[in-house]
Image (cartoon, rainbow, N blue to C red; front, side, top):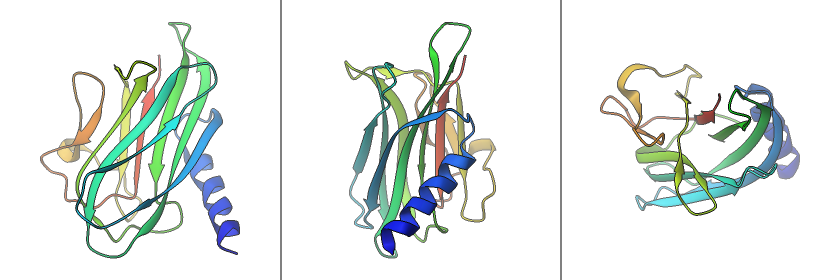
Length: 160
């Protein structure tokens, strides 16, 4: 019963991804409200040599099931395939408060690969804009000065 709900949630997250590519990896993970910095990483696959990494620290509420999804799409103008990394609470709003978060793509050597697009959604499904997040000079996504700690979905893309 629980796994059926998880698979339905996976399908919902995949259907909502910005790129619409082929899902190459999925990794369920459990966010614990212990205030410690934790992370999840998922290999993108598809010959990209990339991994999606999400670091976070959360407090409040109880443990929540989240899902990391990697997608590979058509090659861009640089000949490299587009890649989207999504980290989401697929079935409902999150009741956790995120003290910090960061999302990035890394290559096989651990170097950050610049993302060209990022999106962050709040618990009501609204796309956050402005200073809620920052796509830094290296192409990693971090919380911004106006981030209020509430998030239900984070997406990071390399689109050329």
